[in-house]
Amino acid sequence: MTVLGAYRGLVRDDLHYLNSAGRPDPSEVFHRANLPRVGLDDVPAAATGVMCSVALFLHDGDTVSNLTFISGATAGATLTAQIAALYSPSGALLVQSADKTSEAWAADTAKTFAMASPYRATKSGIYYAALAVAASTVPTLVGSVGAKPFLTGEGNLAQTSGSGIGATAPATIATPAFKRAVPLVIAT
Image 1: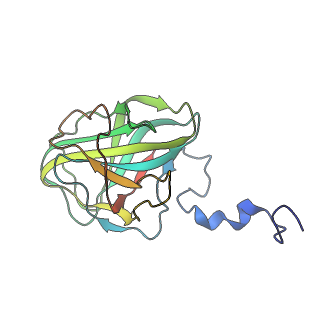
Image 2: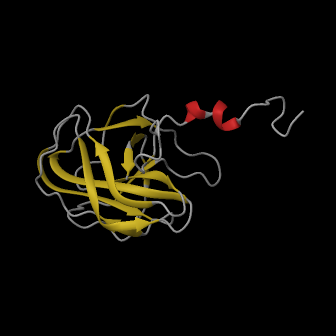
């Protein structure tokens, strides 16, 4: 018997199917995603002016310059503010994008938000990628459904916070509320 019990192969080779979020050759383009690219569907975003933040694992040294969200079947209408931001594991604002104001967001379209400056992670852990859209119709997003945390120390996979958010991300994720719909985010 080995330290892996009866299994004698390479664990990384056996468990590769668990991370379908990765590109076939990860050396091609740096990216991190919070969800695999399979089993995704159309999920509701947060209400207008409310921030939705999702847990995103970053490794020490990862540099995030952009956050990309993908709209689902519903396009945005009468958009007045659109921002993305990256928050620390404790929920403090690290960096945010410029406001995309009334820029159109069609259905089934990826929208990339460039951060004001690249952020280099100083330790491995769960960070939060956030999106806030103010509009008469907030676009739905490509994502999945997550369960509410029940184990000690578990955090939300997605959460909402704030209200009336426009061009400036809040300094902290204050009073987060569990959100069942988990939008896909890709950090590059």
